[in-house]
Image (cartoon, rainbow, N blue to C red; front, top):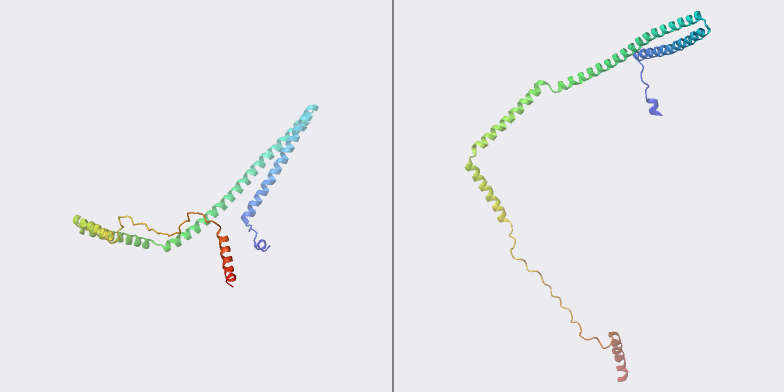
Length: 218
């Protein structure tokens, strides 16, 4: 609700009112033309009716009224044309005004930009860039002129020697295959024969004999 109340309605200017008045007058003329056309058709029917009755005088009068209505329609067409041309002229003038205002604002912004980057600063920047490029080219020419073909060969040989030294410093990889580790696990031998009696029964018998021996000794 607050957003709707804060929204301001569009402002209606005098130009908008003028265009609106012209369009209202245009609509009135169109309605008037429609009415004249209906009257003309009615006079045509009346003329036919009088001719059917043999009354040529009244038929002629009805046709004269029709002709007058048609002349009014033509005048209304001219008025309508003038109104439409005036409306179009005003609307196009408003468009031209908006375009002109936009050009003015754009020209103002462009001037502000030009103030920030004037011609002298741009020319100075281009000169500095050209000087820096020329200076770098001179350095490249000087360095290139000092090194002959033999110098380049010495540099390449020194580079190869450095690469070879780097490889020589790395640990060597043994050529022979390393012996695999062997782990001997000693396991008890598996008995060749099955026990004559289960181990549990044998332990029970040994326990019973151990209990009987003291009793026999007493």
